[in-house]
Image (cartoon, rainbow, N blue to C red; front, top):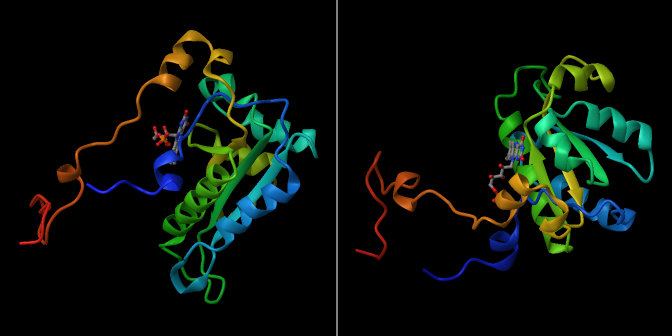
Length: 196
Ligand SMILES: Cc1cc2nc3c(=O)[nH]c(=O)nc-3n(C[C@H](O)[C@H](O)[C@H](O)COP(=O)(O)O)c2cc1C
């Protein structure tokens, strides 16, 4: 197989972040701009992000951090930025349910992660948080769903982690075999590696 481009191949979700290095505001804006340019059904752009930069607004960062489950707090404590990703469950134009809102917000968050990587930083998406607490802490209106917390910052050496996390951090990244996820023209049929 031909090699993947570096931005996709190199993006990853580190747990070791450098707490001493803020995310420069000019980079943070471009990282968010990347999310902004994600595709979305009907151009609804249903994503919302509440960006909590410890160097700008430590109180907001604390609110976001408190939403994390203990296993994520252990490492995310060093991330200078925590961003809460939300999706508008309703269409802005019709108020009907928007069944693509999660799909679109996921695309936006991946754009964000790729741009962070392209700038020598990293974004680590987190599902392990309390969405009800996040709703309460940030006064989120009912129609918006809290989807993920995203830790953003500069990666740090794995040595800053405890042993269990360090092992995960340095373990080779892997993916499930292609044929279990991608099919050729019908359900379950392995993809052909070459043109017929
Ligand atoms: C929606 C979502 C939720 C995730 N939740 C967590 C989490 O709670 N804690 C964690 O350490 N990583 C979390 N991750 C990161 C994944 O574990 C990680 O993306 C996956 O193992 C693949 O690794 P990679 O991103 O380095 O390719 C989450 C990722 C996504 C997309």
